[in-house]
Image (cartoon, rainbow, N blue to C red; front, side, top):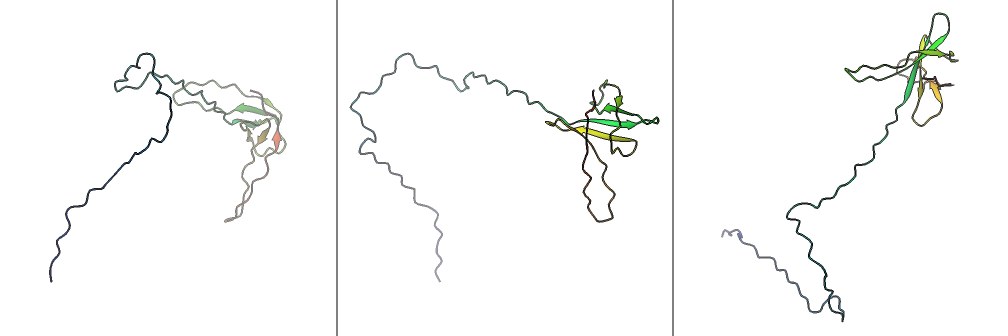
Length: 146
């Protein structure tokens, strides 16, 4: 049985471009450029300043915690996030009418971004094991003043 030798060379690709007639024709003479040639960029980009994009305003959910005092009246205080190692001075608590449907000694009121109404956050319901329960609807309440 004869052994075949493996091919070690390949044929070069053939690329041929033919231009017999110009694609676009005109009887007019070519346009002459007037003025000096633009300076060479010499490997650098042109000096173009792009203005930075406008800052995006981040609107957060505002929230307050309402506490029921021992004498039956309620107070509200805004919830603030204070960065670490910073001194914050949030406004103090203010009197607030106790909302209907308030459960327990304290509850949270939220105002979502773009909304005009505040809602009392309801605690999750106690459900039997292995059953998912829907939380009750959050009642609308007056927004506390800061």
